[in-house]
Image (cartoon, one colour):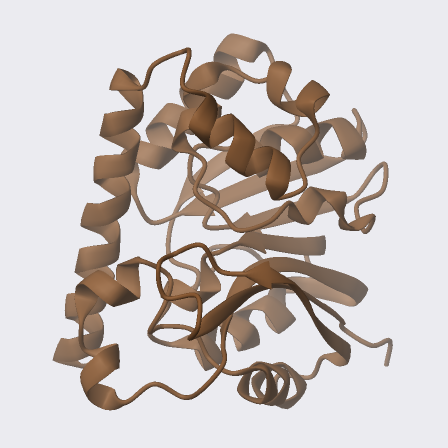
Length: 249
């Protein structure tokens, strides 16, 4: 990995470590985060059923569990699972015969999410420490891969997509919420860790997104715009649901 990519990855880890630690101080009466998640597609019932700390740690741009791709008995992988909101919601969809694995490179997030699942008595989930560019799972071991505003943070997206293709079973699907760039960003813009960590300059365009997924073997690639980003750079990126399928051979 080049120095610039290591700098970006370190900045991302530090940013989300701060989010995990800051959520400990979040007010139980903070309606701002709840309102945001309602706009992003989570239901009031879903949010009310989760611990306040999980809601406080969430920092996505959509609700990948609401795409209708997760079925009972599935093995689901969440890339960049953070505080565990999507893992916990998906655990209800896969049922007792299924399993949900959360993967995150931030130790504080993994520790807190695992502790939350244990307190809630959720037995069909597992949280792993690792990087989405090098997924610590066997080939063709999961049915659905979801992710929530995380792939845009990776400085090595093509590696991410190849790894996704490797661990996904034939006929498996992607259910991704992510930021997509309206225009390509310059190398100078991409070198700014602050803008990258804000889910802005790490984003790629819709055509680049589709091209990389197709090069990694995915078909039926779809990028559906949800709304303009509220990151403060809304003219440069938009939030989208990205779906695709790993075809049967």
